[in-house]
Length: 232
Image 1 (cartoon, rainbow, N blue to C red):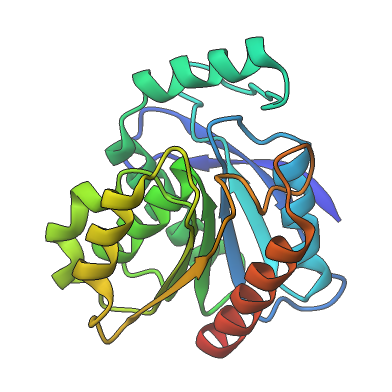
Image 2 (cartoon, rainbow, N blue to C red; image 1 turned 45 degrees about the vertical axis):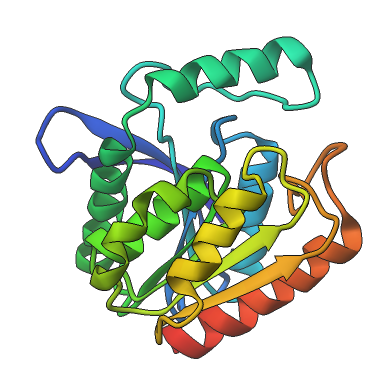
């Protein structure tokens, strides 16, 4: 079953629209699917539906709700890609962490789930890292997260398991940034890093030209096993 809900923002400034996909039976845990810069589009909803099919309560918050509520963009259309970059420039990721925390609180207090994890993509991958450093989320997964190399000073605050998927040919996260992430996190006891040689940003998108079928299947299998272990 799917629906759209509204989650109270932490500061009382409004409510966060979120797509929810529910499993057929009782949820074994919850997964917050954190969108890319393209909004809660068909690909993100498909990811939620996939988690629900695996027995999780899945929720995708509209991270741009403050200034572009309901936007859905297609990265394969140049004009929509450029529109998304504009939203990225306006976006404050600290707001995203507050929204993730609001979702965590809503899930735990109203939905009867004990543990909450997340899987984020692109900007959402960065927010997954920030959730690991700034919230009490039980487990986090980030796919091709941008600008994580600039936030490694927060890594000491990672209290629960974090997995990052790093495509080595990511044209938004270059070799120097990837090297910094490895240098800063390889030895962290709660962090697991996976490299994907030759793959580019967006390789695990559900839909569109960016998807690499084999890479997506490998990364998603690792994510499923990771969340199964840490949200059980």
